[in-house]
Length: 157
Image 1 (cartoon, rainbow, N blue to C red):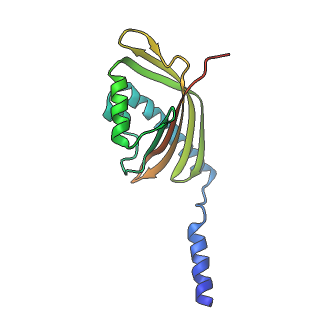
Image 2 (image 1 turned 90 degrees about the vertical axis):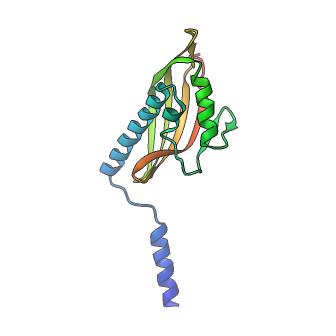
Image 3 (image 1 turned 90 degrees about the horizontal axis):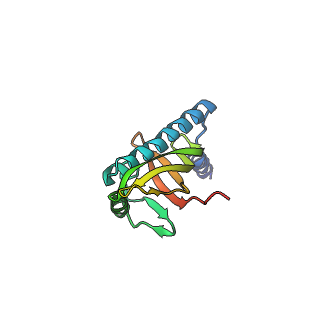
């Protein structure tokens, strides 16, 4: 019985959330903002490989856009490449942006993306912006997006 109690205590300790200091929380939040800006830099490449770089390649990526769940990383890359082939430039800024630190190796990001996207005919795209939510996990020392949700912004009222 004593052995069972010891095992249960060890299991409970192993499952407890990792403690994180305020300094660690601040550092993770800063790293996630950098990662979200790296995502914008990937958009600007107008290249499927540049776009997909921040996403996990472990096979467990979930990406939702306008009610569609992309089956895998390759499908997402191809969808972006098709769209990007019709664009002259893609860029923008986050405002506001929110980071929720979940622990030393996980965080969620939600940002309103103010787009600077122009197609090859010179017409502005995404004029109401986008809203993205990313769930990041540190894998092999790098922050990777493991889940994402993309929504169109709303016209100002």
